[in-house]
Image 1: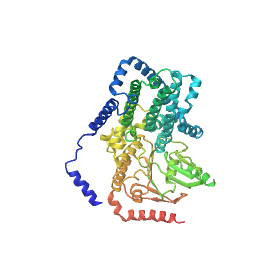
Image 2 (image 1 turned 90 degrees about the vertical axis):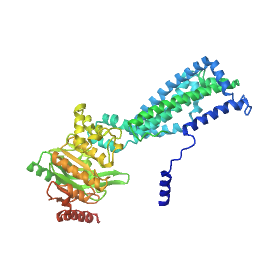
Image 3 (image 1 turned 30 degrees about the vertical axis):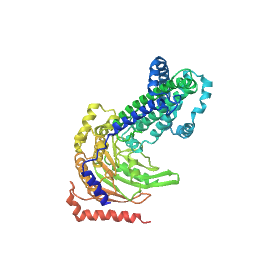
Length: 271
Length: 272
């Protein structure tokens, strides 16, 4: 043990070893390599161009049909925002109720966790039978897809509020309402934020998958439609737009986490 | 039940101080999965207004339950807690404040916001409560740390904030549930001294639960010694040491004798 500690100290005393290239540069290089592969693999016929359209062809196609893609992206984003309202808003309210009210928690919470474990995609055909294949079905489906993780995370956050805080607040004369607003909600915030992270991602998946399975517009719809026609470049441009959308959601959630983290230090963990 | 009537008569006769805190034949039984569990049984005592009273006893003897009952956070199964003339059945933040073991500070609030929280709950105006909170933080020597969050403070500093919060609430009775339990001995001694200094100035009634016999003798006017569960009061020991208390008192024979007496009681009470 002492030897080890000594060795570490010696190592620490020496000029700190700098890696040849920093992590940021390395990340950029990886990205560059992937992009290069994307361009070269189909061109050099390492993979069939039907399987993978070269990067340049994908971009050219995307730009030439930008109106079509933008229109469908707008449809997807619009559906996604509505679905998020259902998932995050509805999930938060339901989570607060189920986490905070014992009777509801004991009866409904186990059912909710069971439903969360079911791959809901299998019931999408039923959905379309009920509400058609327009925007409503994917909004509803995406909303429900993200609703359960949001509900469960919120309920868990409310349930695990440190009782010491509650007792202290009670001793200081906090009313039931004050206990909820000033203790339960802030204490549950880290869990609620992680619910938003998972819930938002699931909602996006739900909306795009719904579009791919049965819809009349949207990026998912465009991807499926072009795939059946072997328009590989269009398919990849669609995929690229979905990735972009995921990136924007991730960025939004991260800035939310940063705010929550500044407000509630060391309990909000980045996933 | 007969006992309760006797106590009631005594009260009518004696009158007593306005803010005397009394336990009259208090028993508390917890309903647990394994059946009823008696935490404390038939506990009676009086804490005189303005005195510093210690509550000691082996682990799990119901000290904390007793304190929670005095705070109105828990109700006795039998008997009652009375302050002045009124029975305590729910928290009374204006009259009874609690300082908890370890940190019960809210991690998302700064030291100042934590200290002014009880005033906020009472609807005290912002400028007034801020001023009062800063005053209290100055009192515990943390004026400069007012805007720090609990996680930026050491264990001792956190407990200072908790004490400042207790005094900011400005109750006539302050119940302290092992407030220094998580601290090292040096910090604990320093904080004990500081607490005494504040107490000498503000003269609140203090009930102080502790594991440390030295702390109990050093701080208190009277020490209530409890038995193992179900907790009973074995003896009330008057600590006839002069105030203000100083460290050299610890070396005196009286101090040693009092400490030994409490230890004997606890050890003896532990035996079946």
